[in-house]
Image (cartoon, rainbow, N blue to C red; front, side, top):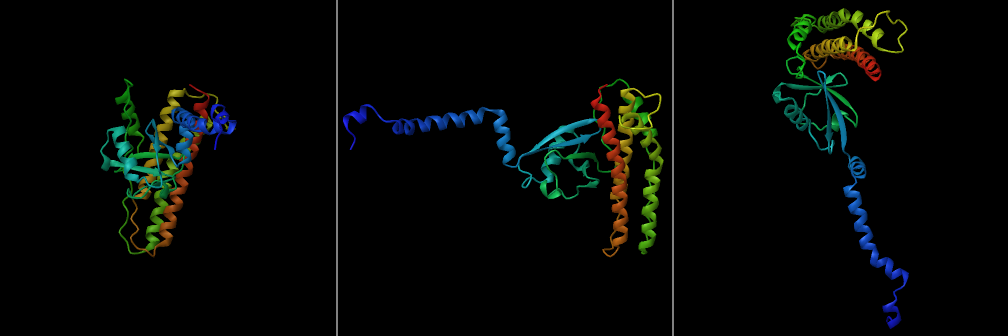
Length: 266
């Protein structure tokens, strides 16, 4: 039983116990209202932020719980951001089109900081809204550089025929772009050893980056649209996979060189 003296003059332990709820409440309140600490807590709980490239636009999209969030949710968000119909959107990640919208974000291996590319379902890269007065001329110039027609897949029951056709398709899609890619890298990468005497302006290089990216993305779509219905045709699938990897590597080179150029500023 406490004495009169103990009631009037509580010891340190009693004071600490009485103040503990107040201190905890203050700590919780500070954590809640501190945006940096709150962001760190959300990240610890599984929240990630990904970047989606759409033409010249970039969207940073937060995904609260990637292990539970289906791809359809991300597509719906992008449809709202771009005002494009949901059924006309496709996402590319690491050279592959994400086809099953019911799968979760994490099931595709998408992580915090991953970069995806938004494209059109029919193979077209949707154009981001432009405030430039020269929009029409830019579109006309861009359309002149786009490969107008792709080779039609042969109807065959022989895997060797399809394998040969895939190899030729990759060459026809990529080889015409190689000189432009090498030139672009020499003009934008500060570490390039074959720099030309004349370097185009930032605006011209920006347009060239958009053009090359668009054509390489179209090439990836052409490969993705190849139908291999025979489950035993492993060589054809492997040849298509190698083609995708080859084109994706060139796209990565272009993006990395442009990233280095942008760090230098306009």
